[in-house]
Every structure is written in structure tokens, then in C-alpha cells.
Image (cartoon, rainbow, N blue to C red; front, side, top):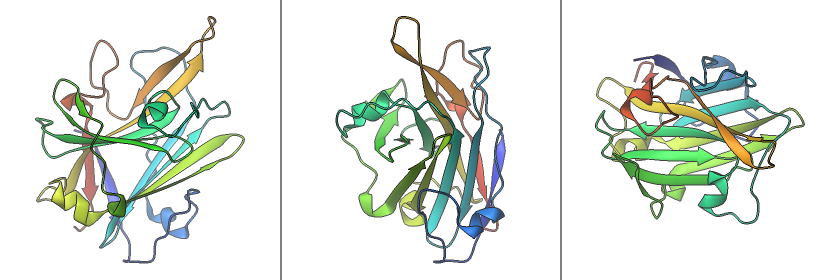
Amino acid sequence: MKTYKVNVIDSNIMEINGKANHPLWENAVVLKDFSSPWISEDFEDIEFRALYDGTHLFVAFKVNDSSLHMVSTDNSKKSVDNSDRVELFLRSDKHLNPYYCLEIDPLARVQDFMARPNKVFDYQWDWPKQDLNIKSNITSKSFTVELAISIDSLKRFNLIQKDGHIEAGIYRAKYNQKQDGQFEPTWITWIDPQTETPNFHTASSFGKLKLVNF
């Protein structure tokens, strides 16, 4: 299982603004190891970073993209489901019963839900608002998403293992317009799940976020 090291920083000095430009981000390992196993064409670069302190896990995505597709008719979870986005799935064990999904578009709108095996999704479930802060920033060439997730909520959902690692899936959905005018997603992932068709909702698509010195 692939492992990403989440470095520790001093408590209560990290603030997110959606730009991922706080000096403390220099302490994070930059993850660029993404692929789309089901397509042959190239896609634009994606960078993932994570840090943690005594109270929060901080996550940042930077995605090069000059042609964003966002469904903005409303702020419903379904609108996010049909938009360009980044995704972070977290599980308590390999059985995926349950696991928790955060799908965030460039406007910092979130589709959060609890899931169980065989794509049983509970869209009525929300990550507690007091435990999750999300901000984003869009430029002409890219967008950035930052998350601050409380350590307390990760513990409540049994997502931090005894040895200090979190099992996570890290993904991206990029919508491209086809000749018929319809938009179809390209599915991009950190871990190749070895599935015939795109599928992030499977145990084989998860890796480890190792909290250093936890």
C-alpha cells in the first residue's frame, strides 16, 4: 500500500485561505503521483499536500486547469457531483463499512456523504460543520482547495489507526466536453485500483497517510 508522510507542525498557527500559500506548507511533502489508468490521453498536473498539528489535519490540492466545468444552478450536493472536483475518501478499515467521502469543487462546495460497500451512499449524512473548514481559490490557470479537518472528528469516526496512519483515497474528476456537447469525466487517482472500469469505491483504491510522530 502506497504511503504519504504527513509532517507535523506546531499547534494553532496554521490558517487556511484557499490559496495554500501559508509558509508552513513548505514543510509538506508534495505528492504528484496521479494517474488515470482507464485513458491514454494526458491530463494536467495535480499536487496534493497534507500537514497536521494537535487539533487539525490540513489538506491542500492544487490543480492546473484553465477550462473549469462547474454546474452552478444551485449549491446542492448533486451540483458538485456533475462538476470538476477533487475528492478525499477516508475509511476505518479495509471492509469499507463505513467510509466517508468529501468531494469538493473549485467553488469550495462540498458533497460529503457516508458510504458502505457496493456503493450504498447516505447523502443525508454531513461531516459535522464545526469539524470541517473548506476554502478555495481560482485563477486563470488553476484552482486550489484547502481543508482543515479536526483531529477530534477523525478519532470519533475511527479514522486514525493506532500506529498513527489514516487510510485514504485521493482523487480528481475532470469534465471534458465531447463532440456531442455533453460533458464526461476523466477519473484520476493516486492509487490504481486495478479495476476494468473507473471505480474509486473499492478497497484497492486506498493508500496510507502516515502522521509523522503521532
